[in-house]
Image 1 (tube, rainbow, N blue to C red):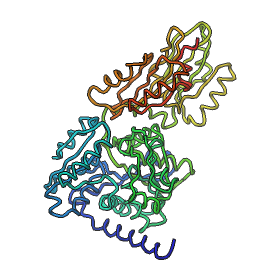
Image 2 (image 1 turned 90 degrees about the vertical axis):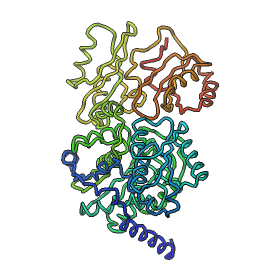
Image 3 (image 1 turned 45 degrees about the horizontal axis):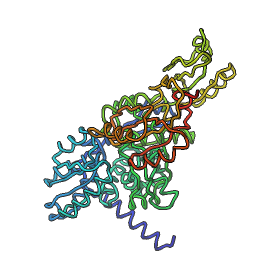
Image 4 (image 1 turned 30 degrees about the vertical axis):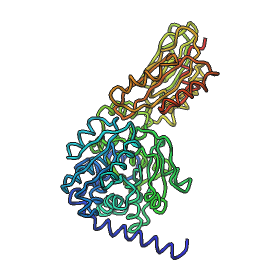
Length: 517
């Protein structure tokens, strides 16, 4: 990089810092507290501090960026009003900001948006327009409406004024906690990371800035590998607040310069972090809100950090209550305190007792079994452990030496999401089946429509669905078809337009659901 380019970068960074220091966000936002997570700090041997953005009036940091952007609009723009597409925290932040400034805000939300979020936005005085089955459809509609009616479109993350507003989180953090070693920041579109990173690196460049993403929505990680923003095409929607396919161009440039590393975490690790926050400060974080803490824990363990001062951002607490049952179900796995196994045991009297004895006193958290034939049975068993990563391999070897066949399913998403609720569902007769998992948008009548579309031309042999309080439903379906018909069937599935994945070769299917004759 030439000296002139270095000077230009410095000038841009200094401009961001100046604007962050002068941002008028406190007309509406509050300076949130920083809490030390005592229980977690003692457990992992580091000092862990959490920045409580769930304390904001809309329970999310998004209020900062939205209000700061509105403060840059001229009088004519304010009179015409503003518009955005969002099903989450940006919608609420913009709605309240517009109400505070006395202007009209229109929020376009997908038809799949849960009522609790729609009502929250309306409660802040915004006009809500429901359009499309996905964010992309809602966003396209919002952009067209903005052009037709002369409305100012407020981007949720890839806007300099929005980035500046989010950067005020870092300003407060450095004033509240001294001598930090690292700050972990959740990444969706990158607005919070960009604003915080550019500020931190100008004032305290020795502090490591680490972005955290879900494994199934790592748009920054991929962009850094490719050298440019890259569309992921499809993302995991569990942490819906950060389920972004494409990092912003402005946010990427800042992240590329000022973010030291990126950590990715699983849904189970996020669930464990939600529980950590509840245990320590009685906060109920949304998955995206607990994301950075999950990354902090994983990074500290991977790098064997001890006695370091680490901070993260609880970025939001707008959680659908129904999702708590899913979180509770997955927490022990995320904390590596539970393992789930498939074990083949002999089908005879006393086999259960012998198996329990072979476990050596390990507490059983779940046990699923159904008679299959006279020779052997596959059981689905959950076991409580102090450290599953270390213990499960030892236990599996011990069981195998005793004559049992063991498969570790602790990281098998199909097992945890569907199969544990379906064990014993093998057909009586031998059947040629192909198995697929699906995501489909949740809205009134969606499941019925999904079934009708799915079953018109192919016989459905298996179906499992559980509502998890999310915008997308998770379905597992089997079809009566041979391997040679897979191409034809998958062509049909592509025409339906739903996200799908083949699960026919998944070991869970072979162990618990398929009649192999």
